[in-house]
Amino acid sequence: MKEQPILGYDWEMGHEEIKLEIGTYYTGKGLYIGMLAKEDGVWESFSDLTVNLPFERSDVHEAFIQDFGSKEKLKFIQEHKLGKILPERGHSGFCTYAKVAFDLKRLEELDPEGMKRFYKDHPELEEQSQVPKKKKRNQMER
Image (cartoon, rainbow, N blue to C red; front, side):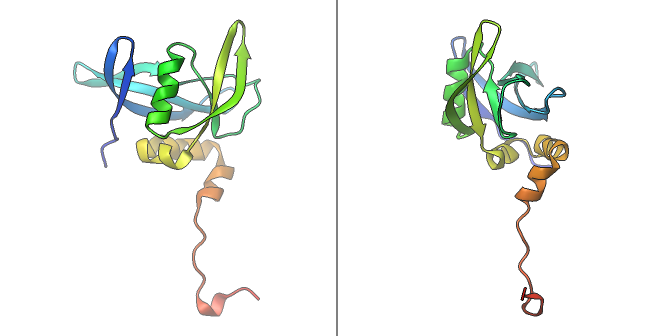
């Protein structure tokens, strides 16, 4: 199995080497993206990139960014071409969350196994991601 790519993440406490962990939130079936960092030779949870706001309107490839360190996280998203920052915001309690339209193809490159699980939870996306096969000459539509 191919090793997951490692991405650089700069924040107020320094530089981290990060792997992404893709999943689905149980409530609302939204896109979950976790950040893993190596600690004592083991990849473990460093932070959540996204937050679950199931009652805020969003498309299946969109997610809200966790507010702790959100400036650095938005910069990380831009630097690694993970998605496009949208003008809409999500709200919960006293917090406001930036919304991002993630590039699912890019996320597939970074966590193929996680995206397989995500597509399993969203079969409508898996159908869209399939490239139509070329038809043979005698199978052309009429």
